[in-house]
Structure formats: C-alpha cells, structure tokens
Length: 320
Image 1 (spheres, one colour):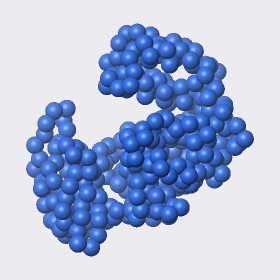
Image 2 (cartoon, helix red, strand yellow; image 1 turned 90 degrees about the vertical axis):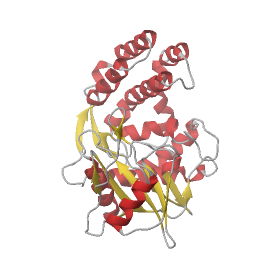
Image 3 (cartoon, rainbow, N blue to C red; image 1 turned 135 degrees about the horizontal axis):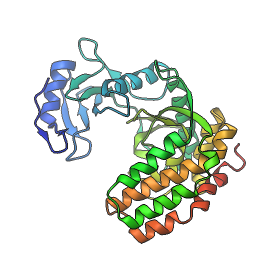
Image 4 (cartoon, rainbow, N blue to C red; image 1 turned 180 degrees about the vertical axis):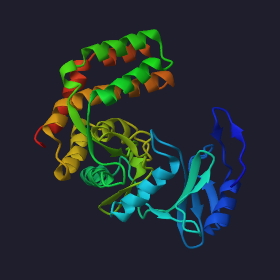
C-alpha cells in the first residue's frame, strides 16, 4: 500500500507518481498518468502505448463501502450495462484498498463525452439510465425496495437546515417543508442504486450509443436520478454552454427512460415532492458556495413551491 500524507478533513491526497507506482506494482500497467481535473486526486487518465485507462479512487457511499462501489460497477458490466470494464489487479482483485478508499482501473469507453452539441442523444441516455436501474436491483443484498417518500425528503431537507446558510434561507426551507402535502409523504416508491451524478460529462457517446461512467451507487428513490437531469446534465458543459435543460429537452430524456421502465402511479403523484426537495438542496449548495444566486434569490425561488411541485406534470404530459 502506498503511504500518502493525510491532509485536512481526513482527506488523502495522491500524486500522479503515487498512482503510477501503484499501477505498475499491482496491475502491471506502465503509462503516462495525469489527473483528469488538475489539482484533484480522484480520477486519473492513464495512457499506455496500446490502451487508454482511467484509474479511479472510490469512497464509501451511504452504507456502501468503497470496494462495494467498484463491485457494483463490475456487476453492471457483467449484466450487460453500458459502463466501463473494470480491469482486475494481477492477482485478480477488483480494487486496491488505500486507507478508507480504494483504487480501481477501468478501460476507457470508446467515444466522446456528451455535451450541449449532441442533445439528440437524450432519449437514448434515458434508456441507458433505465437499464442501469433495472440491473441494479439484482446486485446481491440490494433488492428493489419500496420506501415512503419521507425517508428521502426528511433527511435531505434536514441536512439543508443543518448546513451553513443564512437564517433567512433556513426560514425558506422550513416554509417549503411545511408546504409539502403531508398525506403524500407516506406514499411508497421504488428505491434503487442510482447513478447520482447525471452530467453530460459522465455520459459517453459512441455513434448513437450512450454509456455511463463515474457511477455513484447511492441507494435512494430512482426518481432522484430523473429529477436531477434538468439541473445537472449541462452543468460544467464540456462545450461551454452551461445551463438548465429546457422542459422539452428534459422530457426527451424522461421519454427514453419510461419507454423501458414506466413510472408507477405512486411515483407520478410524488415526483413533484422529490423535485422540490432536490431543488432546495441544490439551491442551498449554490448559496453556500457563493455561486449563481444570493439569499434573496434563494427565498424567491423557493417561494414558488406550487410551481416546483407541478413542474414534473409538464414533463410527464403525453409520455405516461
């Protein structure tokens, strides 16, 4: 195991030399190693004379250990999902533990990152997400479950209230919480292992095919992946057109998804609640990090709770 210095918040920083040495020792891979995002130590691009790989450091996820995240991605691939192929170590291990994280190596997917110039692939991207969700329920120990919406909404909104945002913003969150229809919070919906970061940069296009990378494996309502698409798909757009998807663009993604995995009547009823909760969480993140809006804009956006709750109706119109 490579000895790496621990710095701030318990995080461990890895240099490209550390990763290169580990790749050579454990995988027998020799190549040029670069951090995908300069200054970070999560994903590394590994180029050899014959093949392109990515080395990825995984962390634990809400009851999922770091090595289980890698096992899950390997499981998806074995079941035919469009995800990267995990390359085992020379002694057959899927990952190398390093502290509370683990390093895995995956063969680079063919194609290029999706972006705002290829939004015609949104229906296919929705279909591939549906396949990921359907396969995930077969992962050992993670059967498809139905849980009440409040099991997601309650912790999500409480975490926002506990975050370091101004009191005026917390009052807006409390108002949102009080306005949610209490009778719907006990409605059960399907929980699966979700992708958790549906950005176009994490979707790889090869012709008309779409594959996903950087899968988070977070257990929550499957609706969560759907509601984040509008906000996150073009976040940090590789082509430079960072924006929200339009209602019609979002509908195209959802159309692809429900073509293979129709939403239940219960999900149609409560999707607005999950949408509103996710929106509150994202807005609070922007507020806390000083991006895009101030506290007054935050309060104004959350004041339109009825519109937040109804917005998914526009997307679901005519697609079931």
